[in-house]
Length: 238
Image (cartoon, rainbow, N blue to C red; front, side):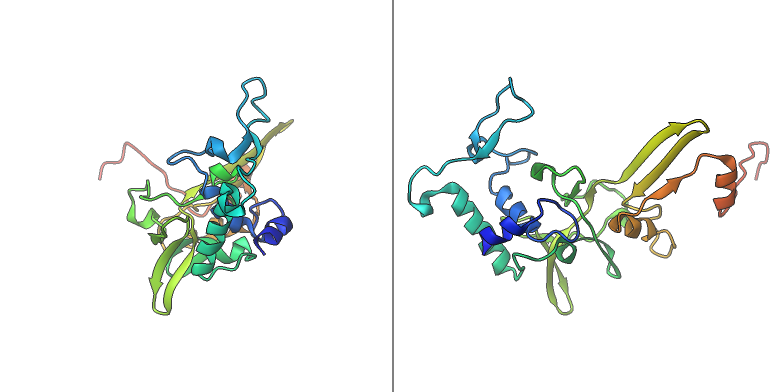
């Protein structure tokens, strides 16, 4: 079942990708501790400075004909066991199990992967959080041993998943034409840390849907979209 799941995986970390988490847990068994790369024994061919873009590569060959002594198969079996023990289907979609939980009311599915997985769109859990603002900290839960899953105790029991609090944040695609800069943005964390604000989750939801927002440069566009204008006058003393 595990091999079939990986065979049918689309090789991406999109919300509709199925089996991505199985690859994640498998690769985790070969991740260099505290680093963003894989250990040398994972590969059949080591890094070659003369071919830096294409090495290391290939899966390490089994040392014997006995499957139980193959580190690759053992790691895959361990990954499967971890997911099954926590009730997560091997072919679950990423949307079902990976999300940012900004508070108890707002759980938003997120695409992306860890840097050791080779993902450009990074979606990771970082413990402890680097943020010093309580309202900026999303729900991360308690780390699950030998996994990147985390769990949170809820009234209905333990809830498990990949809870994201680190990774891609502000992304901009920019070009210059005859009238000046033209750009669109993605903003994963949103603009406001205030749960009561209308802008607490709106940008995060757009990021989840992979919908770009326009970046405004022209005065007329900025004025048309303005919600409030604050004038700072140093000559006015309270």
